[in-house]
Length: 486
Ligand code: NAD
Image (cartoon, rainbow, N blue to C red; front, side, top):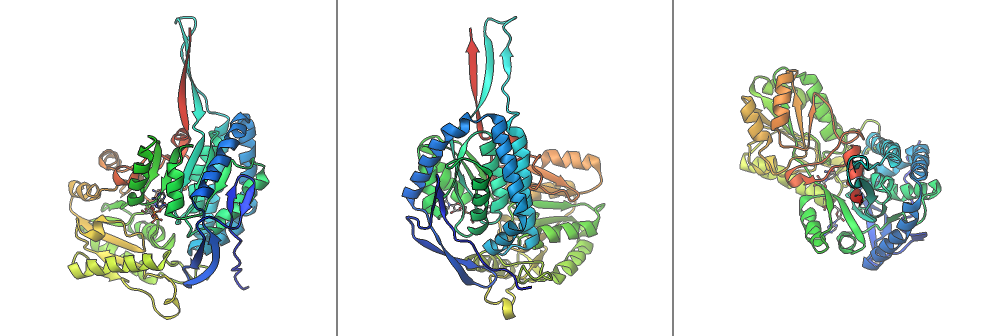
């Protein structure tokens, strides 16, 4: 059966309006698999953003006045509608950025899980009593309150899961949102908005302004936006923080990573290669923030793991994500492809890594798409560019270590601190290293972050601050009011 390549018309969603045009003209969306233009999408300008924030401000009065159980129920309805539409959300996620249908489906399922999870929090947000009338002179208590309008700026690698991690808890806490998605991924977002409307969420509670940096900047600077939650790179995060300084606006920043995967001699090497190959190459051609891109391997098992991984990576097949034989799709743009290939080229030239597998661009029928060969680098030199800077492509670095101290030094030796991974069965080693690793999360023996709603996720250093998921994730969208009655 031929693959359905139709894409929806994309709109700006402002209050109860769906607009086909925006103040910043049109963006030609290019399908990274073929390099061809799929459709032109409207781009929001500063005036559109201003109107979206106005709509969100007006809707806040209504949304906030809803009982918590009513908000819970409407979010549960949204989850049901998204679930009924899972196949289409997955298909459009592939057409957005070339991810595999398997990942498209996992991320959209993640959004559904987050929606149910935070719907469950909506009616359980309580304050506490701090002094009792019987034994104090005052009755003191706290009230968790929503901020108002939240500005949500997300990137292109996993928009559906970003909605689950940011928009859903913001709504469950009683806020309204203006979302500035990346112009590179418009289609599944359009479908999400259909479910938002059908679920009965009042107009203006969720607004979407597709656009580029200028739209993002207008949103961040808008005085009626009370908090900003951002997923993207550290360079943009610095600009956002500088803009937020004007109104002393709080932020949640989920940025990149250079996560270490530390493999000790007692590790199950087949499991290490399977998990590493899946998470870095097959999931999204290496375009994930928290994936284990630096494998630190104990000298005793380095050669054995290098051999297994090389065999596995050599078998991966890049190609059309809709082809069931494909396990690695393209990277998102031509510019990303060129940047990644240039980084690998420099590592090779400088002698800071040995190319064990890949390192180039696949030819033949894949030449017009934005493909990069799954690439395994061996004996990578600590402190080299390829070891320090996020590649955001299908490239994994292997490094040797001799003892725990050396492993820790290399693992903690970048400016990032999003995730760390450990492979060992020694529980004392696990607890020791968990305390020493400078990262927002430590994941052991194949555990992975992000898709579980319950555990908080976030970074240290230039991986950002604030937390998403779990109770911490909804608390980011609440502020505490203290009340004392004499
Ligand atoms: P980016 O920072 O260039 O863009 C992210 C978003 O910010 C886009 O929507 C963009 O239009 C917007 N933007 C750009 N300039 C802006 C400005 N001045 N003001 C406001 N908004 C602006 O990031 P990218 O290259 O699209 O995404 C890749 C990065 O995202 C990587 O570093 C990756 O690790 C990171 N990422 C992090 C996580 C996480 O949860 N930690 C998840 C996915 C991706």
